[in-house]
Length: 130
Image 1 (cartoon, rainbow, N blue to C red):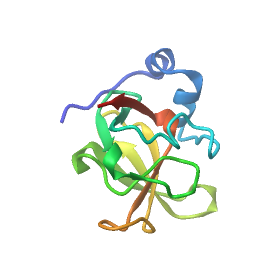
Image 2 (image 1 turned 180 degrees about the vertical axis):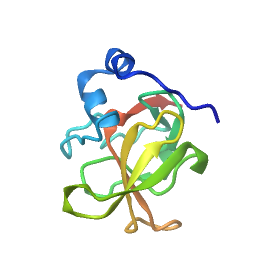
Image 3 (image 1 turned 30 degrees about the horizontal axis):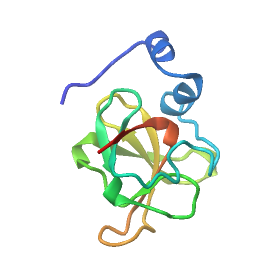
Image 4 (image 1 turned 90 degrees about the vertical axis):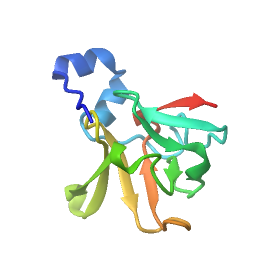
């Protein structure tokens, strides 16, 4: 897998300000405000930074948390998980494995078959309808 590496100036030029704040500075969008939290249309969710396919719509579910939630990534090699100890808690951060964009976090409270909930910021994604 070829990594995409850009300077901070390139990322700022390529991403909208809110996309940059979340994807490159590990921010988050407010719940129930993102462009895809309630999208039910079939398609693929790609990384906003590099276009890598990350999640399929048939793995998306309504977790009631206000962010798009998925029970598994499209290809596990396309996402990376790291320990996040910010904000006084221990969570598992999810990043694009190609460009290192921050996507959100994964929690062990999702539905079968995985029991996982990938809680992802809409602003970190671009939706491609089927």
